[in-house]
Length: 207
Image (cartoon, rainbow, N blue to C red; front, side):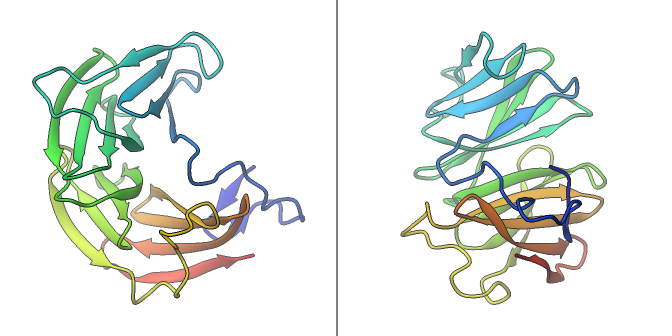
């Protein structure tokens, strides 16, 4: 299903149906459109031939902090570096080289849990959405650049941490903007567009 920040390209009524809910593992698909990476607890899972085929489990080496619980993925297709954000405790921003199949490092997330992570190719940076409704910009090493609070911008009830299966948030980025997508009951209910340069946020789609 093709989407823009203004909603589905085909605005017909089952257009809002998507297979996304909190609890579903995030997926990063490689540039070839087949190779994929997912998260399974304390492991990164590589599917060389695509989801449903054979898979390999990738665990960070002992020289890096233990991956307590993988929560979000984002791939920089230009460099082939996959970013992995973990939950629980301090949390870390891991980097994995998908071409050389090696772990590059881990940077502290400063006790922030990320609901989503995306790569902004235009500006060469990562964009994260925290459980405290903050939009966070990271450099390619996982270093924190800016934090934009959104709790006063997004309406109450956007994300209920006590009932995550009722409403989930995910994130996409491109061309200098980020899309914050709210999914409720398997249907996209809202899309907010955030201009990464100025932090301006506006509701661009409502079901």
